[in-house]
Amino acid sequence: MFLQWNRFFSRYCLALLAGTSILIAGVELHAQVTPGTGTRVDGCWDDFEDESWEFITNLPKSSTNVDKQTRYPLGQSTNSIWTESAKRGQPDVIQRIPTPAGGLPGSKGALLLKTLHTGVPGQGSRGSNQDDLIMQGSMISVSYSPSVVTRVYIPPFEEWEDKTGTSFGFRAAVKAPMKSKRSRSKRRFFSRSSGYSTKIETIYLGMFIQFNSKTDSPNGEDSAMFVVRADTMGQDFIGPEIKQTGWWTLGMSFTPDGRTHYYASPGVDPLTPADRFASHLPYGTRIQSFHTAFFNVCNQDNGRTWSTEWIIDDPGMYYIGR
Image (cartoon, rainbow, N blue to C red; front, side, top):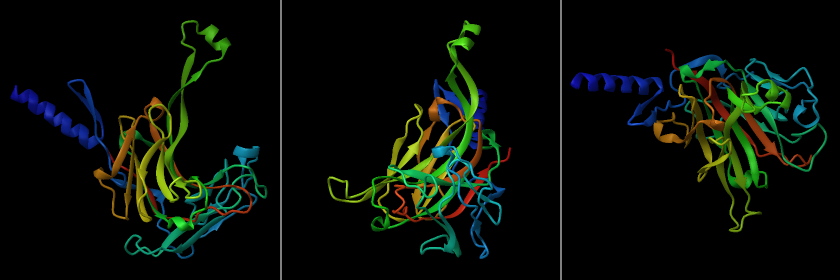
């Protein structure tokens, strides 16, 4: 009996270390992997310490999501780590700046992101839009427990664009099996089918920062919170309230059980297990691989109002070797 328990305990410990899951009395246990654990992926990080860092825009930028116009060549950073989104285009301002107070010890450079024309270049719209800045990625199976971490400077509320809605996003592109409806002809051919097929698709997860302007608030106060994509049903859900501005550390990890784990902590210290605030099988599917990370900057897209200024530092991707 003791030998059986000892073998079980050893398997349990190994499962936790590997980020896998096991069953105890029918209850599935899931180990978390703190973002930033393991080895940093070569070419998939940036500290913005190079004083010659520059982003070369190739205007006009793309707006495929609005008018189906992809305008090549895409903008790119001189170190080849960052690129414009072919789908939405890059923020109008991408600039290396001195690191704001309270940043990572020894950091002298960070990246400022802000934008004006988030839709079709030179045209305003009646709604909100967003621009994307995409990091050089690397396909990593979840069996290696990939993760991504960044520092984000959250400005004082009085400096935000005065609108209630999403202002910023820290995102990840992953691949997972997704169900979709078959056409009627295919359903007739597969007569025993349920009418659904499954294929591997790219899905976009992440943490948005939503501003709630006092202009629209019944209590007359500004506030902000994280809104997260996505839960098991594929719905966005509310994350922690942002009760203090300044530097925050954000992270996401993707474990061998197919789950995504979300982390947030004020300050610039490395994330810890206590900083995890949610874990999900997003869209009810199991993530198979992580591919890249990117940032959203959003505004009203009225051609007059600039977005909130966002500053990031030391984004990087990690994995645990087997």
